[in-house]
Image 1 (cartoon, rainbow, N blue to C red):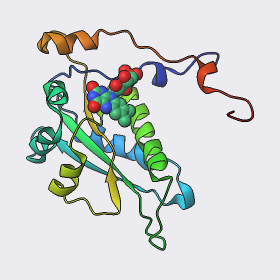
Image 2 (image 1 turned 120 degrees about the vertical axis):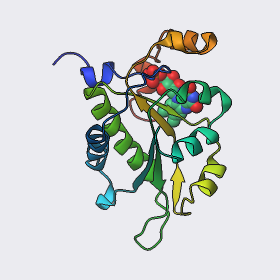
Image 3 (image 1 turned 45 degrees about the horizontal axis):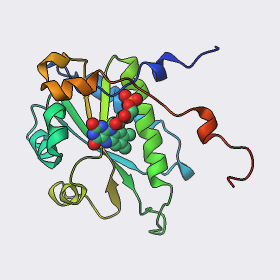
Image 4 (image 1 turned 180 degrees about the vertical axis):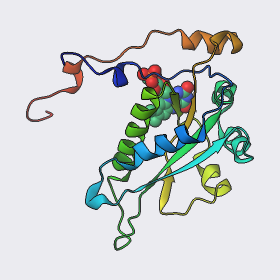
Length: 185
Ligand SMILES: Cc1cc2nc3c(=O)[nH]c(=O)nc-3n(C[C@H](O)[C@H](O)[C@H](O)COP(=O)(O)O)c2cc1C
């Protein structure tokens, strides 16, 4: 293979989601993919809180979000909050790599979502402290993002300024900007 795999190139973060619900077997597969991520001592320091549009907790998630994120994220049929277990169960030690490991579980979830034509848009624009309180998150866990998940929708259904972001060109820095040989200076 001489090019980046479709599972990577097809992933992007949309703002318009279709009304179509995500079946429970598909939701199950997202977490099945997440669970196979690697972690130090196989500790699996991640948890996920999820809410579909029919669940009362869906509104709780929406209420936590910044207004700008609420505008588009409330079109997604599924919301998921990944947590990193920052205090390890093993000797109650801080795990400095918890976000890294939980992030790999999220990476697996993203690839599985893409393979099933599902789109995921993550957001950090929400009230983390209120999330811990409202969702009664134990102190050994830290909420990471809220992920809006669903099928591709019609940008025309969004407010025009939000729909305009949807059309923006996707850019990345050149590899030479982040790849170094030897000392970082
Ligand atoms: C940790 C994290 C936090 C993010 N927070 C927000 C957010 O609060 N609102 C938003 O619209 N997008 C958010 N995004 C989406 C990014 O803006 C998006 O991933 C980035 O622009 C690259 O675009 P792409 O995912 O389409 O490749 C977030 C993404 C990540 C990974």
